[in-house]
Length: 99
Image (tube, rainbow, N blue to C red):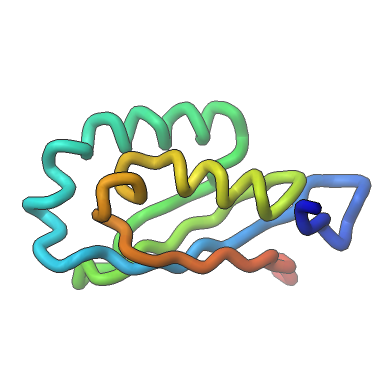
């Protein structure tokens, strides 16, 4: 059963923290256009708030708004970067925006 948000009357926020593969610039090149197109769709749908790499290109950080953590995980695992090994691991946690 999908993990439910602690707030059932509204969408929950989630953070993504993941790792990029070695030689990320070369490995991501053939998948970058499809990756960016998919992110644009997620943004239009209100699922994706923001996403990007760390300056040293070793990690990816993102924020999402969804009804369940499973919705976020499905979006991540459908991304060409995940499917083609550009992202090598990830963790998603529900986030309480205090400020």
